[in-house]
Image (cartoon, rainbow, N blue to C red):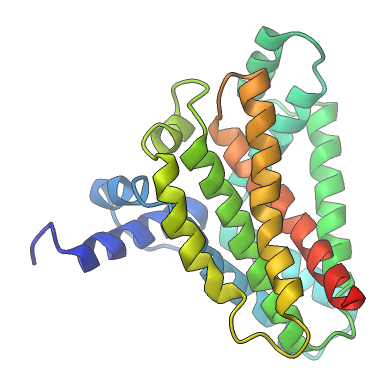
Length: 258
């Protein structure tokens, strides 16, 4: 099969994205990584996979607290803690005031301080409460909102990668430095099915959940450019974690209001 085959390129990009965003053993190698970092659309595509796997817990016949536990355990077994580590690093960086060099230094430091622990803890609490708020809305509605939130979170990462500039050399720079704003269009396009064929009354809520990701991504992008003069891998991971947690609340809130 030719290396220029479009289907082969798409398959490699998706496999590279799965390897980067999850702990699912898909194998692959350098060719998959190179295809992935040139294909922003592969990020939200993996959102469907992660959201579908984790969202399946809502079909379990268990009480809401057990459901929350199953969701959290399943989520981090599938995705690992790499992005959560980026969230903790961002929390430490936000705790630094008025010193750009110190902020950059703290963001690169692997040690977790009070700011990182606080932001990580608050985000996990918001995530858990978001899942708990799904009690009573129905398994299928909950499943669709979880998928939409996950796709939106990955779309937020894609926005950073496409519109950001590298803050420094590193893993994040290999994504941010490769993509241009034109790559965001396909990423947005493949995110639209998360809203399609919505259960009655859920379409606006699904759209709001998906849109939360880019909204968070824009906020992080703005802060990164103003504070760090660019975007790092930590900011990509932090966007994913914060957008997911907020999107669950936005989605269920919009559903209740509409």
